[in-house]
Amino acid sequence: MASQEVEEDGEMDYGDWTPVANRRGGIGVNRAEGGWMTSQGSKRSLEESSSDEGSGFVRKKAGKKEVKIILKFRKDEHISLSPIAVSRELKKKLGVVEMARILRDGSLFIVCKTEEQKNKAWEVESVCKKIISERKIVGDSKVTRGVITGIPVEEDLDKLKRSINGGEVSRIKRLMRTVNDERVESLSLLLEFQESVLPEKVKIGCMIFPVRPYIPPPLRCYKCQRYGHIAVACKGKQRCPKCGDEHRVEDCKEKVQDKCCNCGGQHRVTYGGCEVRKRAVKIQQVKTVNNISYAEAVKTVQGQK
Ligand SMILES: [Zn+2]
Ligand SMILES: [Zn+2]
Ligand SMILES: [Zn+2]
Image (tube, rainbow, N blue to C red; front, side, top):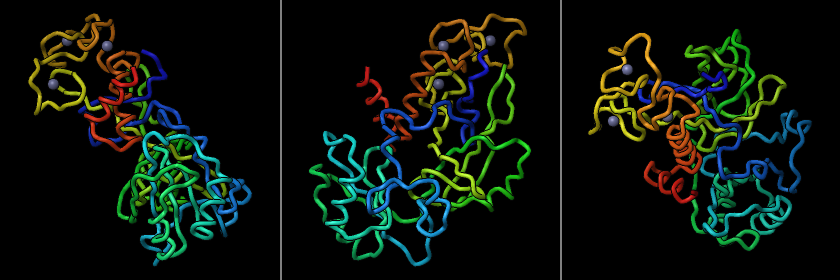
């Protein structure tokens, strides 16, 4: 089995945290456009970010409630925006804002300086001639999950948690990866933030770590091994994840040819290269990145074919 298969599977891991296979940026969204910018429109440099004052991080500030707003563009307006042009326009319409950022789904996220400014932002009908179709005020109650990588396995996670800057981390967990059927600790950490919008990066000491969205493994039925439902809702037959026959994995023979009951290929059902699995992973990514339902994600992936 390929060692780069970092993603764990399915129902048995549901609720547990496992690594993501995709690299930064999810799918269909140009993350390169999503950098931090100042109100003057320049992307912040690392030097700027490392000074505390005016750092490019979303930081929870006491008494700064409900000044964050998300402006969603009409679907057909979903193209990249010039950071300079956006900044200039925001300054003209709202005055100097705390920070603005293009989110993964293409929406414009603005942290205003005052409630009054936020109310003004609510009235904005277009930005750079792109029509806004939806508005959302975001509180601080929601939880978002992200992944950072490059943390040695011997690192003390409690200590690390206390040193993280750039978002309020409520939970931290090391992700596992599968190498030749064995689960081993990876260099990636899952961070659960008490932030409604996932920070782009965090700082640990003076070091910057990009944060990528956490994509949970696709939901796989423990019984029939198909994706998108769980065993209690299953109307299918019992299938073995190893050989594809109609028995439980516990009842499978020691030496048996791997066969996938989803695609018919000579691999286990969890194999990362399985076409059916790849599609399920893609659906999960679309679902997570765009924050839509499973059914909507299925439709979107079908439409991309
Ligand atoms: Zn099933
Ligand atoms: Zn079997
Ligand atoms: Zn397969």
